[in-house]
Amino acid sequence: MRKLCPNFDREDGLETILEVPIPEEMFKSMGTNTALRWQNMLAWMKARKSDKWPSPMIAGRFNELHFLLYIVGSPLIPLQVQQDHSIPRPIKHLSIEASTAKYIVQQYIAATGGQVTLNSIQSMYAIGEVKITASEFHQGDESVKVTNMDEAGGFVLWQKYPNLWCLELVVSGCKLCSGSNGEFSWRQSSSQQTISKGPPRPLRRFLQGLDPRSTANLFLDAMCIGEKIIHNDDCFILKLETSQSALEAQSGPNFEIIHHTIWGYFSQRSGLLVQFEDSRLLSMKTKGDDGVFWEMSSESVIEDYRYVEGINIAHSGRTKVTVFRYGEQSANHKREIEESWKIDEVDFNIWGLSMEIFLPPADLK
View 1 (cartoon, rainbow, N blue to C red):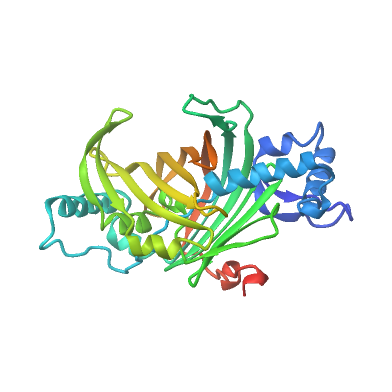
View 2 (cartoon, rainbow, N blue to C red; view 1 turned 60 degrees about the horizontal axis):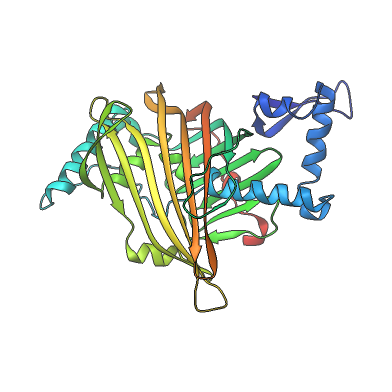
């Protein structure tokens, strides 16, 4: 990945460190030679504001990327994960489904490094790259296929326990910043002037094998509902329903979250989380009595577990999102989006990690 930008003002000047490293594939697509690629990169960095877009076609392009980054690049989970220092909780007086789920979570804790090691984590960072493909919206229930065109990009992710995190994601010239300062969470794209704000919530990307501690705490309140074979691996299925009070807290003035369900598939052989799914239904409020419904189902395959400082972390995976839009005032539409991701660097307990990294945009202070 490209992490440094040449100094164009002075030949003997120091190179500039990029805020978000970009994959070689994204860099090579910007021109026929190195000098032209850097010039084009600087041009789109200066044109990320909507008032500098030269044409409606460019505006539409950035709005499309904005949609993809929100749906698959930076989705949030509508649950406040309890970051207790001691992960285990008593299993007395619980149902068989609940006690079995806790036992499976204990096996997962052991498989990812053990309770002492996970509880020693105070902060982390990760650098990775993504490729996103998407279909167009299709009417009705007809099958859809994603295009062969990849949108490539990279991201930097910072986290500090118990509930501080920050994500910077750049894909094909469009940048998205998202984070949580412990009091509220936010998301803002370079193609949009508005900032979305809500209660503090965990980033879904953490739960894709990158943060075992948060994953274990999330599924401690789940139920074991059965077994399933995932890629020739026998797995236990843990299911978690979002409470009505949590749904109401996450809803906004223009939308209502009707339900949000989470599933985790844990390998019986290794104890690791090999697939993570969630499904949510939103009702968008319109001027009339009838609303428009959005249903989004996400399925993440989690792979390439490797130990980093004694913690077993997934280093790659794939996420598939299916989006349905329907309602009396809207024709039924379906769309599919796919993301493949790879972790290039990850580390824990970062010395000197400043709180300034987790500050929200100035408009929200």
